[in-house]
Length: 376
Image (cartoon, rainbow, N blue to C red):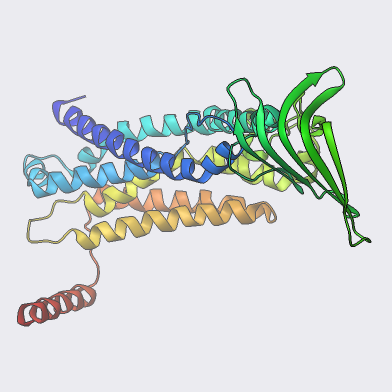
């Protein structure tokens, strides 16, 4: 690898890592805010939530940034004058795209489903241990459809004070329990909320007045909400690549949704090709030498539009490929066409520019806007 190649690789990969870190933090924050209510409503401490984000968009931004930097500093023109063609310059970006493609392959094959499985297992564990961790003082929390609980305070020893429990699961009878104190009891018969000094109100659906009974000690069975091993059925997105390539014929999910397995498999296999395709599209628009007077804005917009269109085709292919098998090949065809056209443009050193009519119209529009602001 020559000095120019090392320079471009180092600059592009550094920009890629910075953009990736920024987008990962942003996605982590949005996902954390989305899931924080689920976490805290189950009484759990907020654990580290690691979001798995795509690596392709940061690569596109990094390539566009480096090409724009090389152009603004007239480095592309100097390289071209020194005999370095756009094709040679393009090859300097390929190692970065190959590294990103390899990372995407490893993530899509193993780490993405592994992360989703860990999250599913963790949420299952939260659900399984809901009895011992549900209590959030001062909040009404639903532990099951139709069952709401609230406590005024919880001591460090686990004792609950000021307990309100409302059970509406039975349409024929509503049970409301009020108690001064309560403790959680686990034994071989199950898990119980043992309440002291309170009352139970039972309201029959066909009666106007409720039946109220005072008690010194009352046990509410929470075993149905408590833990114990629970079987976890992983979704298609949570399957490893090997499980998509060689699914178990006896798997009920595969038997019921073979099309979804096929679409997910194609999406995983083609995902590593997107970094290379995005690189080719971006370089085809931005890699040709231009003077400082030639605007690169429209070229950048064209590169973004081309990448967005290609990814949209892939998304549509995956969604509709579950029901129409031929649709899964659409993204492969689109990738092939984009790569071939992009390589031809790069190899021949062609410059992609919008028609003169569009550039003239944009120039006139910009001038009118400038004059309006100047006179105002």
